[in-house]
Length: 144
Ligand code: CMP
Image (cartoon, rainbow, N blue to C red; front, top):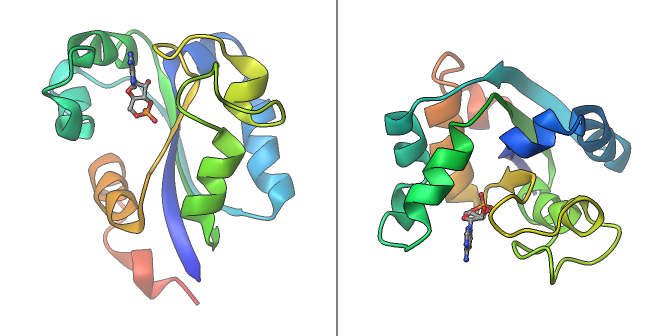
């Protein structure tokens, strides 16, 4: 099924120079880059992105981390890109992410895990709307 997903390279991934490597993995898999920007977000924006996690004990630390430097926000499109994108990224906890995945290859800390990818088509729709408000709903209409 043709889908779009939201992928974000987190501040540690940008600072460590992993942007090209990460984009290359999605490109070589065959996905299409449909939106990209380097952006620093403020606290209220980060809290909106992670609103579902506001009750978690790590919420404040997570927000501090996301606002600590610029991130690369992207829209990727392709067949089953939500699920397959999460496979390319690997498990949330880098201690459990397989070698060959982005987190498996480049991280050891769950609180500094390099990259985010939407966990469902519905989350992708919300996250793309939040991060790319300038690209109004040609999401769906552009899918073939
Ligand atoms: P992400 O895919 O962006 O979705 C939620 C984020 O919360 C996750 O990646 C991690 O960065 C963070 N996270 C999840 N569990 C923990 C935890 N136990 N401690 C710190 N951060 C966490």
